[in-house]
Length: 388
Image 1 (cartoon, rainbow, N blue to C red):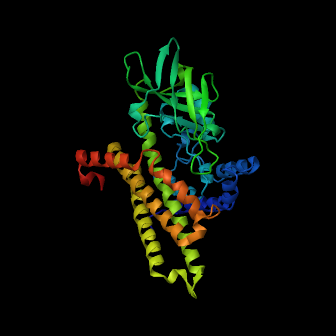
Image 2 (cartoon, rainbow, N blue to C red; image 1 turned 180 degrees about the vertical axis):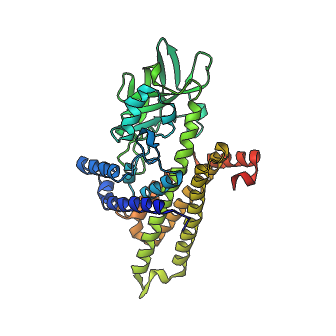
Image 3 (cartoon, rainbow, N blue to C red; image 1 turned 120 degrees about the vertical axis):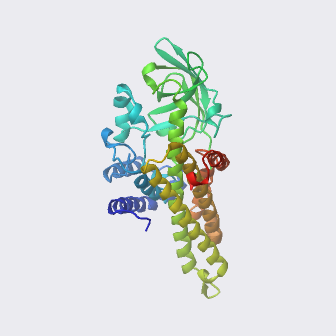
């Protein structure tokens, strides 16, 4: 099915088996605020490395596995089958960095990240600049051999797990004044502080604090690429991560359908399996149909990346994939809670956890409404044939 090669199927099976190893830890993590004991979390990290499921998106030249976009989707799809972000242990450092990293960045951060020795986080979003990353107010100014960064970032996902942050800022001086630049900032660094760490709907170990950068000095060697290229890297990351969000939504939907179907077959109501009720059948049938449609879209989008389709077209297709897959997964989760009934409202139930966790997939990396705007703009510029 889906035209997968033997290599694709082997990688998919490996990732699925690992996800199945993680699933038994979900309730423990949920009831502990997302945290697992350090030895257990470390073992999961080492297992992901051992199985070749870490840095699948990184080129072999820097020690990664050089997987195709489709293969990366296959791995992240299985990661999405696991609640409480336990599947995030199959981490993907930014592949675009390998092409622009200078010698210092390569040795100090990039290669250790690929080896799984450290992790990054992104400090892009701000209080008044969410999906519209062009509206940032964080600034960077040149001062001798350094840049000085000032601003406050919101929703800095995985900050508590990270050794460094990518910080996007607007340049205030020089030939690129008003344009964006991206910097690497070590965590901790003087002038970097956590303002507060809000509680979120999901229970995961990766926090999303509000972080202030106050007069943070970084050497010019910490500039990623060149001045004025910050948005280029942001768009590259958004394209990649939107597709990976879509992939994880596929895995979540599959798990929900499987669990809800098994429950409906086993649950007996008035002497008959719940599965015999046509309204329950309809919910499961609609869910399976939408998963098939979403998976076909996501796999085809991944193949179009591997085939070298124009990046601007890919920008639209990745938005289409994220929009449809995230909305689809939300609908599937809602139906699954309904099939489970009262059990579906218990935190120990997979449907309850996914019902909470999947809601954010329609918001981060660009809200659904932003994806609609992107798709419409691409439709107007390039026509329907280019997109579909």
